[in-house]
Image (cartoon, rainbow, N blue to C red):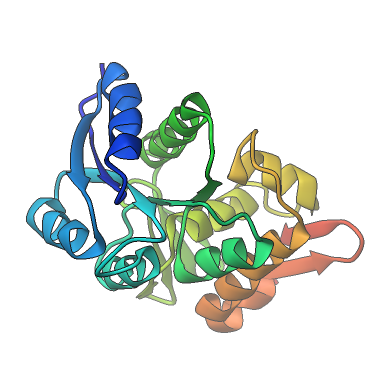
Length: 225
């Protein structure tokens, strides 16, 4: 059984109970918050032990976007947004703010659990040694990235995308392959999701952003030039 803590934030008590019941069966410890202000309070008190946050968008006092912004100022903890909205623009907006996954209500609790487990598995599995890719130094154990000695802040999804590109250095990767390997098996998206993340990563890498080459009609390739 696992021993990890998940913070479930939703103003609907029935929704919190549904999610909690399924996650507890898998061995997770659950903390609950019914609004944004309570979520931030609980997170500050337990930030060292919270492994992932399930965060509703529409809530009283403080909405999910506001909570997300505040948490991202100090933490890269994986965050899955839960929302009744299913519009693509909302999804892209969430990724811009640093969301790691995005699930629209209504959803299958089993699929939710699968996504939680997939994200936590990816955050645990990388224990290889630090590697230098032309001045981009990636430390998988600490999940940190430095460019010319200066650490840059990446969301979990941005880190995983960059790591996937460098792990496949000099190989042209299609957008479908990137979606399947970085966003996982049950994500339905299009190239704009990847393109949005690539744009942010390039910006954060500065001059080293040129290492991520756009392969017209295909996808992307990481190549140190």
